[in-house]
Length: 333
Ligand SMILES: O=P(O)(O)OC[C@H]1O[C@](O)(COP(=O)(O)O)[C@@H](O)[C@@H]1O
Ligand SMILES: [Mg+2]
Ligand SMILES: [Mg+2]
Image (cartoon, rainbow, N blue to C red):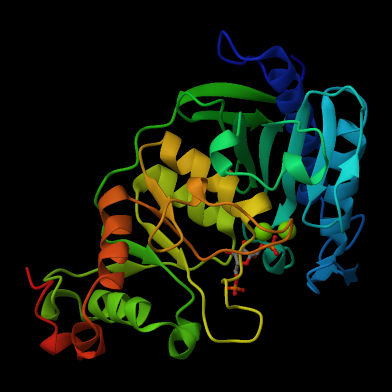
């Protein structure tokens, strides 16, 4: 290995090689991000992608860097949030990589943690076939977070392991296995400015967190929203909690905001590998089948009991979810 100091014994060699290339690009990006504003303006507008998202300079830089590094080798198919369709790479390659090259791009200029999310599948015979499949088929997944430290969290399907970038060496050091996500937690993350657009079960769930000790949950909660999926995931892998990006009634948000192939499936894989749960509010993300490359899905993940509780709100009778929190009886402790 080159960019990773080691991988666990028994790792599929092709998967290890691809992981090493991803890590190599992440290490370079970390250096470039750290110099942002000196040589170049990484948060400047650079165009629009298929989804109509405004691309920042760093979105394009990161996509090109990963695509170049993976082009020759084990990767047959490359699907990126920043590309219209699947890029065909090495004809005989055994693997397919799905990637969000730069996640949390609204945070670039704010100097808040951003990241890269990726998943590695066995390549299928057709470009779409490599990605329009259940997240359960992932061989490995992970993210790099460009924060106070650059950290790489990876799963090869046997727990989650943590690497930290040694900037002096430009290599990631394996630190150890991440602890299991606590099953319970009192911290939740949701963009509450969308409250009026949510469905009734999600409103009822959040109403009851806001009501805290005075509501049916009978305890106080804390809230976070970083608007950077990698940073929210990293916090939850570190100390538990729950993240929600539900569907809402705004135009274009009928399936929420986050993309199944590039964001939700890889993160769900990591979360399950760390003992947590990841659903669309009710059903496991890894069992879902995406119907398009850029397709979105509502996404709820984190501490297992908390994610189960969100599903339970979807089963409440209409009269219960419509009741003000003070009147909601079924969940009273
Ligand atoms: O701005 P909002 O609606 O709160 O959305 C924030 C979400 O959007 C994202 O930034 C989407 O990812 P991209 O930056 O890759 O488009 C997530 O990281 C984050 O969770
Ligand atoms: Mg993203
Ligand atoms: Mg992105």
